[in-house]
Length: 225
DNA sequence: GGCCAGGTCAAAG
DNA sequence: CTTTGACATGGC
Image (cartoon, rainbow, N blue to C red):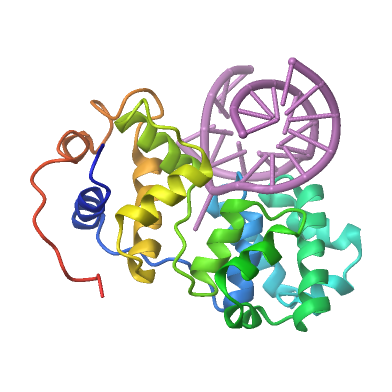
């Protein structure tokens, strides 16, 4: 078994602190989490910008749009008809239950908040955890395809289902909001740069770090808190 | 032109 | 409970 904390330290040393989640407020975090499903953040940014320019970065305003107007605003980020439904589902439920205030989720316990999110069609485990971690300050570890890919290369035998990996990261790491936020962002950064082919790593741009990822880790306390 | 991107859902096996 | 196909545009 690889040492997950050690990997975190190596990634942090190599890439430095990441500024996630880029957004002006918790609602924008949540919208971005839905829009970025299987989509580059680049395209999501353009879509978020379009929504802002139309002054509809708020659940009320989004619900006022016709299906046609909303989906034309979402076109650039792909799966736009599906995401039109997902976004509507989310905004409707958010208005119905919390008057559009995501901050209300913080007053619930973690289980309740996550179940509330998962009950919305269009929000699965990763999107839910992303919202909980980056918009609501719950220390829950987000597992994405990069994380699954990286772990399965380091440990080909490990079961990499969402819940198994999420449980493992949370078991082996200190339950710390800032570490969870940084670590997930760092894994995405590694995943984006790493070569797509098997295995980790050899000819990818950061092969030196990959081959030494489990060794020589200087203790690095800053950024933990 | 081919492959992939910060997943989710519904339908099958 | 795990696997498969659909969903769609944009970048390299």
